[in-house]
Length: 192
Image (cartoon, rainbow, N blue to C red; front, side):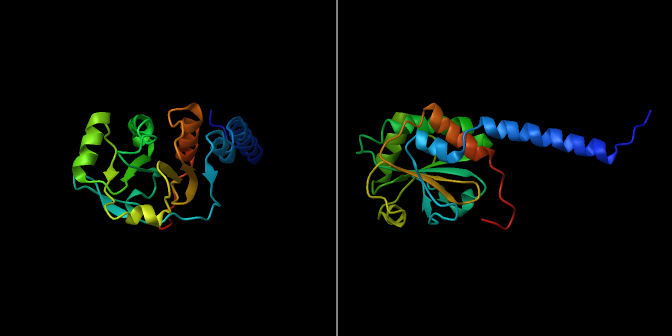
């Protein structure tokens, strides 16, 4: 027996779907609450991060425009920075777990040489891109005044949050922030 869907049946179905979506949204904390849990500073929704382009110690080119459509965790660090070191394994775990879902973890080194960066990456087992910034150009563009400094950038290219100093990136709040950003829709083609 073939049954026709009436307008009232469709309306009931849509109402049920909207109720379910709203219930799921109510269970998830809003992004500002999540940022507060990790003591991150948020940005106005229209703020755009400076574009950058650089090379890894292995000669791979990485640019912010090339990462469009991905959530970007951009960490400024140095091998001599004692507070940077404990964050790196957490970034590596986030990279391994969430890169297939659209997370790009990128490290920007503060004025150190290729050999130092390679040794540091090998020692800590880091596989995410570590970009050379020998003249501090990228650091200056982002206004980095202390290490570590970490920026979160949404799929749509907007600046989401900033952390100056170390954070617990292996914590449940950090994972919740990453998951919330990954759950945001991909930007439409032709938009930032």
